[in-house]
Length: 172
Image 1: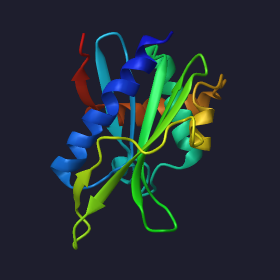
Image 2: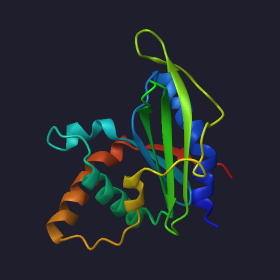
Image 3: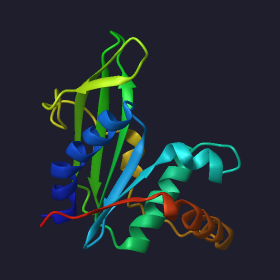
Image 4: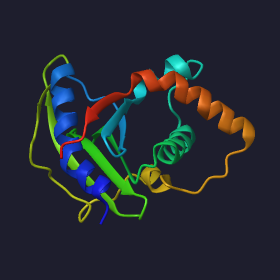
């Protein structure tokens, strides 16, 4: 049993929902825990620190694996907005542990005429029993032997994004 994985499954959707309703928008986020804190990083800021580019799938994989090692994290999660063909909008939460435990859930949200989020359903409509985890999350906790230049790039990137972490004390 992975305490960080269970903690993120229980707490992250509630925390993220509060942030979404406060800002009236769903912005992609990555989150993980160490012994004392939960760290949340919104990926929208990457264009500022990545030469005008957002976070690519490859960069996300590298960064998550880098952060997992740096913080000795045993679980990671991500949240992002999705739209189905019928225009149903939902927040997709994907969780993965170092032990390859996986969980995915989807919470429907509603927007007003200006596209601002006004409501997020508390009950999730699907779970990992019914929907698949985001394929990118499957790459979390891979054992990557970073070349020296990649390691330098990630260290530099980390120093730039570190001030943007939202830090939440873990509930005991």
